[in-house]
Length: 438
Image (cartoon, rainbow, N blue to C red; front, side):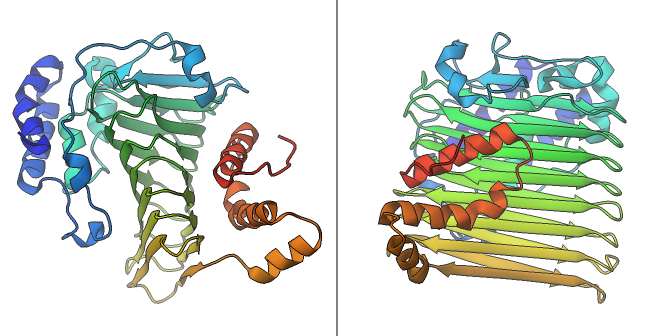
């Protein structure tokens, strides 16, 4: 039995395990039917032209862990932003870990998706937001919807500022020979509220894992959201990350994606505008080696006037690694006075490394300021020569140029301790000590 058949056949048993109301049952059933009809995406689809899941799907994945697996904090401390105090939502093989987590209901909700889906006090919120911005058509998103039960539920009410960052951590222990997990996150940030969120998926050994994650983010009027995704996993880890952002008037939503590790990573990032004078920011740094593959697929749907969006993706590829950037800006007829900027800059350090880039603008309004661009090249030999002539060894000169290339995105990080952490990861990926005071 292949993975699709295993998932479809296990759906009824899954529903018997979860306590859900009839409305959610109908949502699940329709979602499963969509996945059953479409199956896993293939390279025949334009959106997946450069990314194949075939090799991954040959693994015999366990779709539900057989047991709860405990790990201790000292085993995973290095993955947390332990330099500062944070709220923590920690999941081990898809199961919530209470002893590693630090949740709250004190003015804000930082708790479990399973609680929000089943407790009556959250019913109105779930009815209003759950599955409202996520695609009803994209097969992997609907697969996640069919099996949605656990993940992070974050609700920041009106006029509240989260007093510390929130970390969402998903650990895979490797106790299963191969494991598939499908976390579901729902983030609601009320009017005039502010939150910072850090999300990470981390395998603790080399057994294959496939994560199919869906996150829905709702930014109400004048809300501010800074969302950071750290993707630096082991060589057998595969991640499909589907993120959907709904923005209201004068909100600011930023998603920063740092892709450094893993076997295959696919980031589907979709922004939808439902109010005027709002700003969307999509930043990313990708540094790959070996045969790693990262695919960024972005959409910003400008449907209202006087809004801005900024996309800045940097990629550095060595060995036989492969990168994909497929970014689309859609400006609808009503979205006059739109300011949309999209950029993908890439450096190839090897003749066998590959980048496939397809920046797109689709504009139906006539009073807009939009631009897009893509560059692919190698390090500047003149700059390399200049630095070496000043006594900087070749390896360090090369690393400094690559760091400078990424610096605009690094500087956009608003949590100083996270900025230090990302800088350290980049130095490790580049194989040098950059000499910064960290």
